[in-house]
Amino acid sequence: MEIKGKTFLVTGGSSGLGKATAKLLADKGGKVAITGRDPVKLRRVAEEINAFAIHADVAKDEDIAKTYETFLEEFDHLDCLVNNAGIGARQTLTEYEKKNGNKVNKRKELTDLKREDFQAVYDINVMGAAMMGAKAAELFKEQKHGNIVNLGSTASLKGYPTGSVYVSSKFALRGMSQCWQAELRPYNVRVIHVNPSEVPTAFGQETREERPEEANKLSSTEIAHAIVSSLEMDNRGFIPELTVWATNPF
Image (cartoon, rainbow, N blue to C red; front, side, top):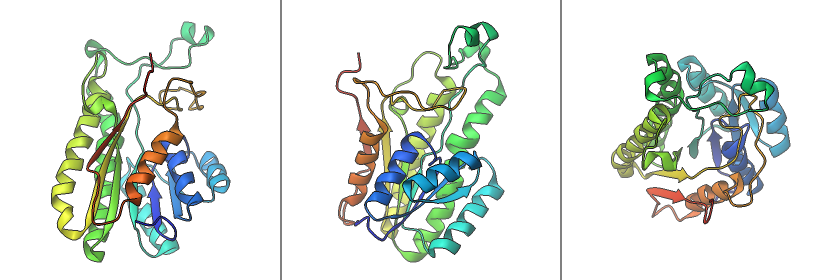
């Protein structure tokens, strides 16, 4: 698919991987809309990367409906959905940790988990992605073409201690990607599941401030390049799943 002139909807596009992907798509001539929950930050980033801002929370059905209504009013049709919005499961920092400069919330152990911990993460990582994907699929089946990129994680490949909530949400997203591939290929719809390893971003930050890049870790730019390169493949083919690891993060 040639990026220039195509329309893209990127959820969670005001920071991290979403911002980097939206910027690269816009730089290549794509018509890009980004969604986000912080209206001030969203508008600032949209102006910075030449994108259209839609203030929305993918955990809310009414916001999803508004997102598509606003997008189609602005762009008429959709060529690609990038399901990027996601959160993790963390404990609130203690006052001691805050005073000592800890800005990264700790992951919860199994014995600390409550039902609401799963609900909060699944509402965005699973249900939000599913409902965004459902509406995109409706449009794509009618127009007989389209693309969905689901942002997974290497956490969807293997679990780890304290990862019950986040890891299981990414396993669920990976499973949905495989189901959508089987369901939508007859309509010329490509579903690409991308698993980045650790990328220093605002993810997990209580302040939602971007973390500085680390020389031995992946950057948002590399993941954006992987996503866009996958989309640029001729429409006769697609990459079902792409996992990107840092060469030596140790």
